[in-house]
Amino acid sequence: MQYPTKNEYTSFFSTYMSHLPTRCPVALLEQTLHYQLTILSQVNEEQRYEAYQEGKWTIYQVVKHILDAEVMLGYRALRFARNDPTDIEFYDEDAYISQSLDTNGDWDLLIQSFDHLRRYHIHFFNSLSEEESKRGGSDNFPCTVRALCAIISAHAIHHLYVIQSKYLKKEINYFI
Image 1 (cartoon, rainbow, N blue to C red):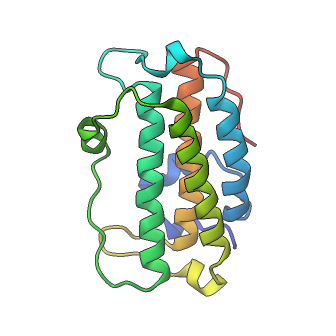
Image 2: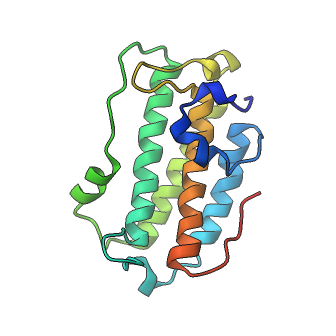
């Protein structure tokens, strides 16, 4: 699968996409999975459920948000790959996290869920033809399938940089 051009995603995602090298988006899903699991393994039990500042999410909530976003982006990619003409509705990430009653859940289960979801998406995106990967976009969400594949990695990387710098108070170990 080819890396998307800038006209295949909205400017909203430009900051996220700037975190990625221009490689095959499916390869990036695979490579960032290892990176993500490495960074998240550095989070100790005490750090998982505390915010770095009043009004900010905990690391647990940030990881839940990464999962929620990956589900939503993957769902959109599936719809676009299958030429579903229905317009995509808006997704309010703050509302999703605020409505989640699981704020201090099982960390290991959360990480396993993250791993399983990412492996599913690697399989899904690998199964698409080049033509399917170029499909996409709706009036509300003008992104191609291959752009969504890359955005999944880029979005997670963005939040992992925040976890490293704001929560773990470490120098960022950048993904290359």
